[in-house]
Amino acid sequence: MPWKNGQGATTELLIDPPGATLAGGFLWRLSMADVAESGPFSAFPGLDRTLMLLSGGGMELDHGDQGRQVLARPLEPVSFSGDWTTQGRLLAGPCKDFNVLSARGKIRHELTVLELGPAFVALPDAPRLLVYCVRGPARVAGVLLEENHLLDLDEATGTEARAAAGAGAVLALVEIVS
Image (cartoon, rainbow, N blue to C red):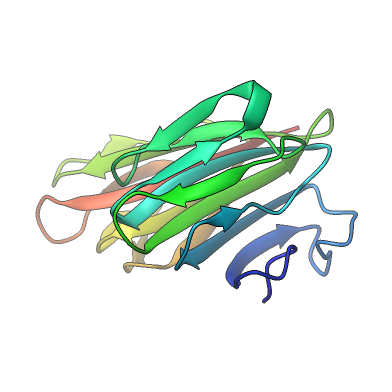
């Protein structure tokens, strides 16, 4: 789908409530985008935002008076306000990012990265946990999760994960808390 500012495209992975749109009314949203050139970020007033590189040579985020953040390497999340006017500058060519938005004051999110080996690892205890497989495969709550797949877990689901085929699986964990 087109970016809100019309200067690129994103892949929406999941939005809540189902059927909500960027025009309003969503509590949280997960998406990915291929960023081909430097430019302005879409404004998301009233939303908190976390961004993480999945691949590419890095990006600097210039938030004007609020400062700068550098995404130098993949899998290192940074958080900022969707209210801020933000310019993105690519550091070494195109990149792919993972983006989480949540409605400030209504819902809260936290994005962490979990590198897995062959032993089972406990997942965070959250009312809702979204598990994106960055590098796989991984066995999560009894489900084989392939690379680039997303699993939506609630507190009634199993809460452990491990790499399915030796070491090297990487998961992006998004905890959603109301």
